[in-house]
Length: 315
Ligand SMILES: Nc1ncnc2c1ncn2[C@@H]1O[C@H](COP(=O)(O)OP(=O)(O)OP(=O)(O)O)[C@@H](O)[C@H]1O
Ligand SMILES: [Mg+2]
Image 1: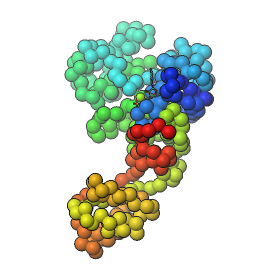
Image 2: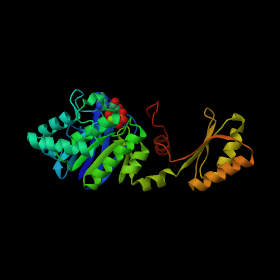
Image 3: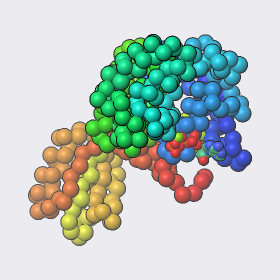
Image 4: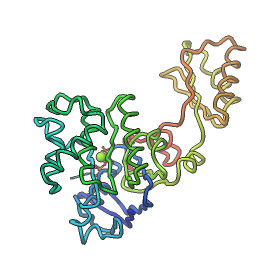
């Protein structure tokens, strides 16, 4: 449904995109995962006809994005990284306004607005100015606004950045519903868990280049499994902690003096955790914090690129 080849965009010496290919099959979700400045918004803006690339081409539903932008706009919905709704209008007025922009008549616009408010659990707040909305409500309204014309292709640029866990889960439910209804989605995110939870395929980008792609399982296979991170109160226990970590884990433990903690990759999450805690117990070491978790985006990056996401030096 979405296909792009060799997308490039330079701003002076900054290569925002440096030859990105992507493909999103009909009815599937692609997550474009990357840190700040990776080129996520640039990709979305090009595909949504808001920005012309310096090189490359793209089609959506077989329509050429660069040659026929007006037709593209009829099949896509875009929810940008920053809210597009008018603060001084109510939620309902905003949706009616968007519907009118799509040339729906007043009656149809009002019906459509009511349907969307209901669907996004905004009916109670529908007649309040949106500047009184919480961050999560704004995001939902923004998404609702991009759906007034029932697009079959939806772009979501960082739909949950800055939301608390509850609002994030609410947004995930809404996104899953769109997919169930048959939409094709491209979403950008900085969260590995979000890509994992929502996407059929994940593309990791950095400095405008695709550095890895595949299904969540394929990537996890490449990136290694869960991590155990254990902190101790007493810095003196750190060497012993690292020793236990090395025997329990499947990789080389990473020791962090500052947080008094050791992180190690493990093969068998829960069982390894039990083994680890028993090892501590046997040596009489008291942990101050114990965590079993998936790798973070930062660790994924380190594994794939050899540098962290907030790299200070450009190499
Ligand atoms: N209009 C512009 N003029 C100059 N540089 C730009 C412009 N837009 C983007 N860039 C640069 O291009 C690079 C990619 O930006 P982009 O907004 O696509 O990143 P992003 O992945 O969306 O980041 P974020 O997670 O912060 O939203 C960055 O280095 C950014 O500073
Ligand atoms: Mg962005």
